[in-house]
Length: 93
Image (cartoon, rainbow, N blue to C red):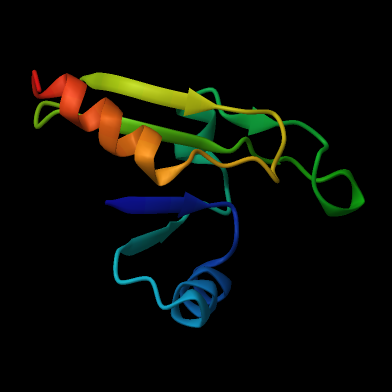
């Protein structure tokens, strides 16, 4: 599991530590990966800055997208049980 954020590396690291997450946080403050995945939420950040649209993806070992959840509301996040259900479905369970 990994998270990608528009925040600079030091901010991403601090957020990861404060939340006690053990997974990888990647900083994409130039929005390179976020633009590649078409996840830019234009002018939605502080002072009209471009930010990342909230999104969750399940990928297989080849990088194929098996499932995704997208929202335009940064307050809305997928429920953990929905991710687990999607993972089970992707594995034929």
